[in-house]
Structures are given as C-alpha cells and as structure tokens.
Image (tube, rainbow, N blue to C red; front, top):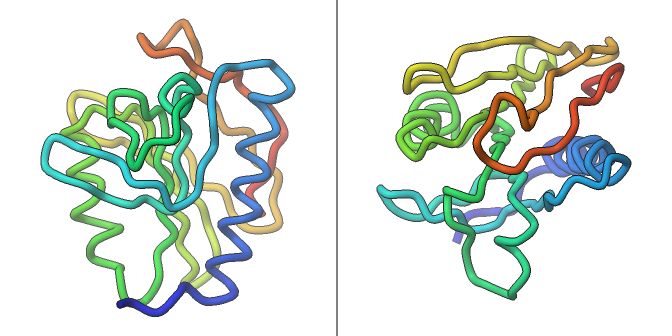
Length: 158
C-alpha cells in the first residue's frame, strides 16, 4: 500500500476542487467534481487526483466512471509519481479522448499547466502561477460534444 499524499498535495487538491466546483454550481451545469475516483480508460483503470465528469455518470454509486463521461482530469505531481503524471497518464487520457488535462507542478515553484486535447494530443494553453489571478477557459458547449460547464473568468490558481 502506498503512503497517503502529503499535506501540500492534499491542500492543493482541496483548493482546486473548490475552485472547479464553484463555476458549474453557479451556472447550473450538470457536472460533478470528484477527487481520487476510479476512471475506466480503454487501456485500464486509473485514479486521477481530480476529475470533472458529467453528473449523469455519477447518479448511481458506482466503483468507477467511464472515460467517455470525463471532461477534465487533474494530476498533482508528487516526487514519487513524476513520470506517470507528466508522461504516461497524459498519453492514456489523450487515447481515451478526455478533452482537458491539467497538471499541478509544485517544483521549482507552484504552477498549474492547463492543456486541451487537439489532434489526439494535449497542447498547453495556459500556465497559472501561484498567487496570480489567471482566467482559464473552461469546456464550453460550443466546443465540445459532451455536456460541459460554463467558462469562469478571474478564477486564480491557488
């Protein structure tokens, strides 16, 4: 059994969850923000740190959520999982056609790398630095075939 994530990881995960949950709640978007939930990909099962999924996919108490219902995955990079979070998982998520991938790096300084799936691979669209207010384009109904949550402006990465 792996040790639980450290305080910095848990604090950041909680804060990101709160930020990600606020915009869709305010706009009434049918999504759910979950931490450490099983996601079933074509290549197997993964457990992202945070997932934004269609609310219908979580209507029942299931053990996992299908990748088709996932709009965004977030990975928080820790010393023991750098290669998985930076290289392996993004490839698996792209293969599963998950539209958005965010990666929170802690070293050398905290920053959130925001990426969109384009042409079968993730392309960085924004980097949000700790302490700075950054507008991040959220999935929108006009650019996604999946139900999505409204864009929020002025939400900073913390």
